[in-house]
Length: 342
Ligand SMILES: [Zn+2]
Image (cartoon, rainbow, N blue to C red):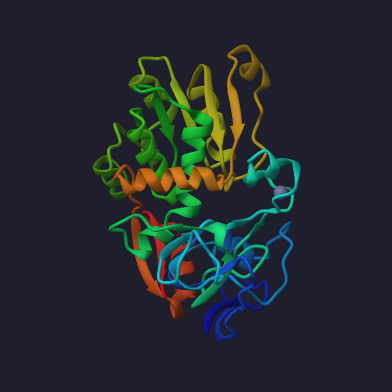
């Protein structure tokens, strides 16, 4: 089968499209013929070295994927050959303290596709049968492949951690990325008012179409000042923070007393000022979040199937164009998920 292999840690230049053996399915697993995959920033991180993530090269990149089951256990009762499925990208141990209490995403041995083992930029993949979920009716494989990382991360940040009440105000930085766009849709679905920021007018216009209540152009406007104007000097109930150092100070100042900041990324730096006086005096809750549990993924897909959420696709590429697609991601001009058709 063809696959996008990371041969050496040399950035995008270290990736080649090669022929490799179709993986052999083990008992309890399904063999999926992949139809679509989506890009994530971690693909670039892996290509650049993947520091702190245990892996061996060559490795097939790709965390997000969807396709069709072509082989499963003869006695498999929940899945069937021919079923269209989307893959939950985390493989959990099922035995550690965190798995046993149902928080699989906190598994001490959690392994992710395309990070710790072969991923989805390939024609086939094997994963445990418990990792695949039916694609919502009427969805394409590309749309389904756009959901796992971005949609699930946003879902956990809002539904499980941030929990905005109907009518609450949610600030989302950097609308354009997959997590931010999913967060906008999920916050809207929950009945929240949203304030989104971007330095790109086209991205703000698209956010308005997707239901954003207020748009702030951070290239020309003072974000904090505008947030305070919009909220009558009160501040927002919840901040969805995935930028890091560049926006942390604004996040801390934009959140209302007793409000929440949920953080899932730190692209611009991981060590901003903690501002502890503000934190305790104003009793701000700061919560970390990453990906989500299989149960949350099932809930997200149910909501998606009822039309509450639909991923935004920026562009589609062929498997042979994975390096070209990654260059687009690297430039940061995308609006929504960059997809690979397989
Ligand atoms: Zn575990």
